[in-house]
Image (cartoon, rainbow, N blue to C red):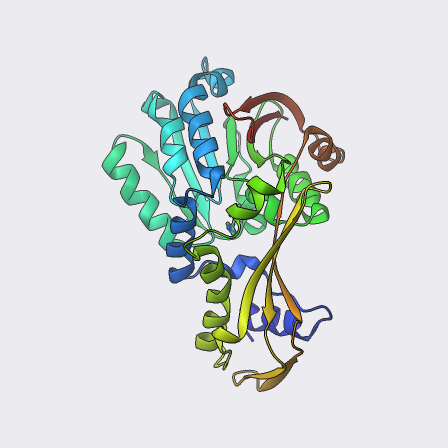
Length: 308
Ligand code: AVI
């Protein structure tokens, strides 16, 4: 059984039901995520683009005097923001190593780099963050980029163990640039997860489509609605797909039937929003310390520079 099949089965048999958001990113999911990032409601990308393009020099200052270093990007996506950070650097001094679960996203990124910064030495690696961590060990000084509030898609416990594992493969003096979306009002956050064009709804529903295709399922997409929620006290944004009627869905590959009640929700994704305190709690069991904060002009988003 593939891990996709196992994880989907486990999630749909659980109470309450859930599906892991890491499976959003098939070919169609990648396309929809790019549309989300270009949506006016999805402020995260613009904020971080502003930070990286306007403050690149300050962000990279700890690496200024070094002869050679590596820039490793976890969850590189299409690299639009990172290109801004790399633009001002002397290309002989570093290697850029983007890591992503999506080989399609890595291909798009490599093409973008060839077009926009052809001199940059780029060594892409396809894989899950947790699984590639070991391969990051090495003697060269490192800057690890974990941008886009990607950490927010992990529940806190997993985020803390991820940061712990990351800290363990780094050497003293290495840095992590961690891009986090900050806690703010629901009037700003909720529309980012419920855009008017319906890209976010389609992004969530696309996972049902993927299950239909890969696990021979018969989900009827018009019988589920995208229902995001956000609690501005805890900073937790959560996305659900809600069943609009009592229904039974078959997955013919494992050969199971799953019942849904009218109004029953399938938890699809957490997108945590942060503040200093929440981040400090996640860092307690690591050897990473907050060295500096880089904010956008609206103070919606923060790129934290962490030092090992
Ligand atoms: C990739 N990640 C940080 C996005 C987020 O904001 O949680 C994924 C996303 N889901 C819906 N819209 C965007």
